[in-house]
Length: 106
Image (cartoon, rainbow, N blue to C red; front, side, top):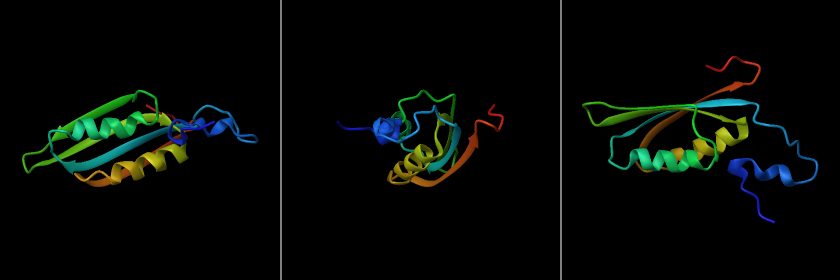
C-alpha cells in the first residue's frame, strides 16, 4: 500500500497517531509575478488535500508578487510543503508561521 505523506496518509502505519492536524500554517511567499504563479502555488498547496482557510495574492509594480495562504495541517506537513514551494523557480522566499490548535487561529 502506498501513502501520501503530504496529505497525512502516514497514519496507516502501525504505531502512528491518527489524530487530526494539530494546527494551521500560514505560508508567506514572495515570488516573481509570473502568469502561472497562482497555479504553481496552488498545486503545491493541493498536496495537503485541504482547501485553504484564507488565500491572498497581490502583485507589486516592480514585478514581484506576495502570496499568503492559511491552511490547516500538521507542522511536519507545513515543512514539507514549504520545501516544495521553495523549489519553484519563480519563488524568492517562503516563510512559514505555524500555530498549534492550542493557539487561537483566526
